[in-house]
Each structure stands twice: as structure tokens, then as C-alpha cells.
Image (cartoon, rainbow, N blue to C red; front, side, top):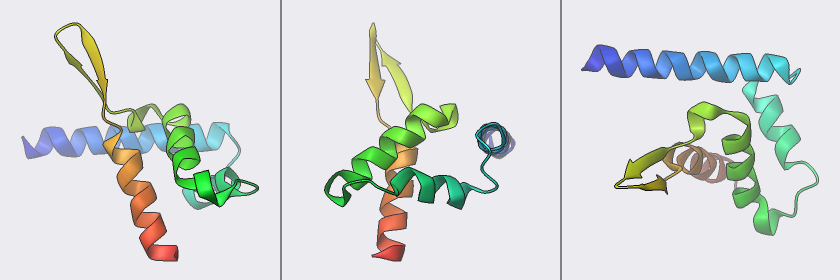
Length: 88
């Protein structure tokens, strides 16, 4: 079970790295800074969560229940919360 989790995390990080390179970002932090520059800080967290979801498939937390899709988006929300707590 732990091996499968580690494999998922590794795959996700590789996907993020590939996306960053295709967008010409040298690091994840340069992507974050570019994403929040010129953004109204009142909606900054929502904007950044949306940007992460749109850019990185790994960040899309979607499950299926019966015949409906359930959008959780836990990974990007936790990341944005951690960034806010660190840099406020």
C-alpha cells in the first residue's frame, strides 16, 4: 500500500515537472509567483486554486459517486492554505 502511494506521488511530481517545463517555468515557485502577480488578493486564493487545477492534472481531485462527479480539490486547496500561512 505504501509503495502504491509513493508511486502515485512520484508520478504526480513528474507530471508537474513536465508541465512546468512546457510552460517555460524554471521552478514551481516561479509558476506560483507568475500566477498571483496582478491578481486581486481578495480573490487570490480562489484564483490560484483554479490555476493549479487547470495547469496540473495531478491537482484535480475528482471522484465518482453513483453517476455524478464529485470535485474535492483537496491538494490545491491545502497547498494554497499552506502558502498563505507561510507568507502572510
